[in-house]
Amino acid sequence: MAFRIKYQKLFEVELRQNYCLNSGAAEFASLSEDEQQAMLATYRKTYSWLDDFALVATPETRRLMAGLGMLCKTTSTGFFVATEVEETAPETFTPKRGLDAPLRLRFALRLKAPAFMNYTNLSLSGHARKIYYFSNRPTEANRSRQQGNRRVFPFLSLEPPAFRNGTAYKAGDLVRRRNNVGAITLALRDGTHARPPSDTTGSLDWRRLVGQGYVNRNDRISLYRSVFNFTFAPETVRTASFTLIDPEDTSFFYGIDAEDQPFFSENPADLAVFSAAPGASLPQVQVDFRARTPGRYRLEVDGLDTGNTPYTQTEEVYLDSELSTQKVFGLVEIFHRAGNQLGDYRLLDNADRLRQPFYLLQFLNRYTFWRYRFATAPEHAPNPTDFAEVDALEYVTRASFPLTKSFIELDDDEGNPLPNPSARLIRPEGDGRVYSEVYLLHN
Image (cartoon, rainbow, N blue to C red; front, side, top):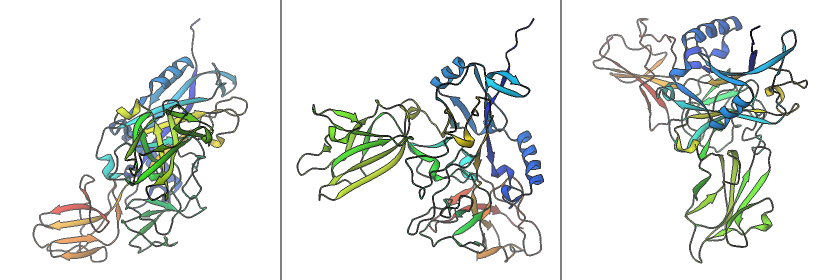
């Protein structure tokens, strides 16, 4: 009798890229259910996410999966982890080796296609020591509701921050209405804008989106080695103490012990602060966080400047000495916890049966203003309804349009369609907008 091991999916992650899923200018989420399913069927046949990314399970994750009878497999649009199971009832499965203890599986994403950053609505700058962090934890306890501390199933991204008056936004930033998870608005240009209106038609600053769960700036955090030099934002800091807050909202205080050595304690009274010599300031402090488990934390730095004014600096960080030496775009962390701690994101139900959650990483495509440059004055100018004339050789769309694999019809004044721009030619400019460029000899 042949021996057979039975596997079932423990969870699956699918990457959805609106650049491939939009229907012309129509956002994927705005399509009917039948249209969405048709687009997804084509997407799963034609898209290969491994053209854009490499997936690498961390060494400890590979060891954990081997010990628990798990396998990681890629699909055309993502990956899944399967586990050895026992069938306790028809189509009902439990892990054969059990998942009695908390579990964390970590998967690094390495970007292979630089053009991905052009056509995807992600920051165009400030990538040094930054990664995108995705997780199946429903909340991040050390973040506020205003900042955006929740995830909405099935998405692995945090919700965007609520709009805040006086904030300098960058083109591509996403904001939400306060206490309204579903109403997401896209900033079209850099600036300190007024609150997004309910109807953004004609707005030069904002565009209301239909979908939710999009990867956004709240998912981007700093990646550090466990030992690193912390540089203070102002150059006048005189004293400083450090606090690491883990995802369970437990605080660990870092300072100087009685022997004048750096030390962690759960009681700040045990520690002295880092101090500069009299009359001097602290340009940076080397911190040693090796006593803490690699993972996500909120780092809070408090102290006084040389004028005895209180100083505070906070940062979302991921500590991992091994990952920090690699070119990592993002990290997916999947947790297992007993009971209902993870809500809809949990891997097992209360009877330890597989729930097989299907998680999503949803990437919004980039919106740009389309600029058409002509070598000679065109015989038929672009349609003035859609375009503003800069001069006889240059026309720019009045509204922003999404970069997409499908075609968006914009016409000249005779009704002839103009070509769409390539995703490879984008240009942020001094007016705070991002432009796509099309060069034409004539039309």
